[in-house]
Image (cartoon, rainbow, N blue to C red):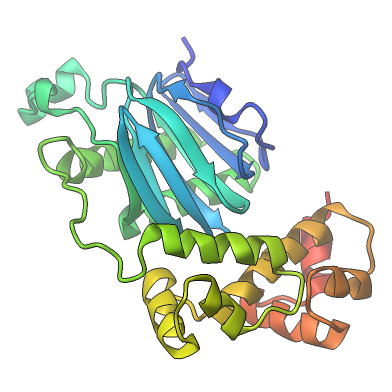
Length: 292
């Protein structure tokens, strides 16, 4: 019997690879768009890991609100039975979603390893910077990107066992606690800036304009924004432009000059320089690898 997966939440999200689908595991590579996700009750445990893009996310699960900056390597845990009434992002991202059974450990594993099934319930946790979860996601992504091998089932079983053990050790409801430190740039003010960038990233936008949006001096705003996002305001805008350029390179027939102008780089030379710095590839090389 196939794993029961809550497809409704992502029914409008494009699949970027064929899913890996086993009776007790499913892995999907999705592109999530702003306002594209629907309320859902999770029918299995889900771990979502960001592979590309940056955004501000707001999630409400069982009445608990979580807000965080999402970027590559950040993950969230969605336990079976949780009713998620809201899941909003401000700009597109690419995620790898790992769906595992409602029972992380079976009866035999419980007996063999003395695990109390009553304590095997996961927490609704977001904004996680967990290197092991990220590496597991990258391993699954690599497997999806190549032809199948006869050893894939052994690989999947091993990764699933490692993931289950790690989740139980770190994100069960009796172990995980949400971070208590509040960001120096509070979420509502950060979101105002992110929303402004999302609306105008293809235009010339100054540091002074971004700072004025939250009534701060440019110097003070720049320091707080870097603390909150890990990037300077200029670098954040550039990365958002690169992200949009990647989408256009993969899905449109526009020329490189047209894409450079449409995404705010001003010239093809500036576009190529910034794109290569961000991705390690020229726009032409990226288009050749990702043309759909």
